Image (tube, rainbow, N blue to C red; front, side, top):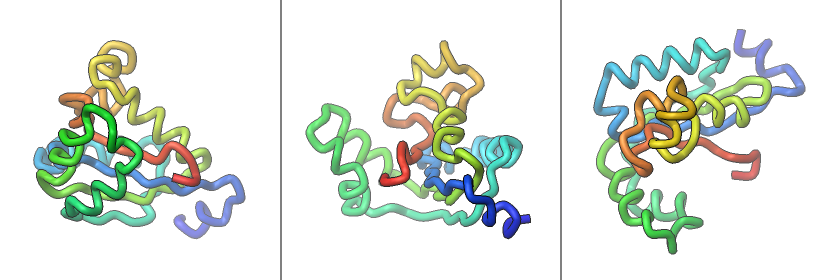
Length: 136
C-alpha cells in the first residue's frame, strides 16, 4: 500500500508533531493516531523523541521575539514528543485542517472536532504542530 501511495505525483509529505502533554496521556495519543489514519494519512515514519532545548529554540526561531516564546520552549521540552512524517494527497493542507486553529479557544468553538479543539489545553499546549508549507 505504501509504495502505491508514494508513487502518486500529487502526493505530499508533511511533518506532524504531537506535543508532550498529548504523549503523556496515552488515551489521547492513541485516539489521535487513529484519527490520523482514519483521515487517509499514511504514517511513513514515526518516532518518540525528547527534543532538546537547543533543537526547539532552532525549530521555533521565527517566534523568538514573541511573548509566548519562553512558554513554548518550556512546553516542548517538558517531555517526549511523537514525531510523524505523514503522506497523502494535499497532506500539508489536510493536516492543518485536521489540527484546527492554533488558538485553542478558537478551535474549541469554531472547530470542536479538530485535534486542537479536542486535545488542546492552551495556545502553547495546543496538542499538535504541523508544517505550513513545503519549505518549512
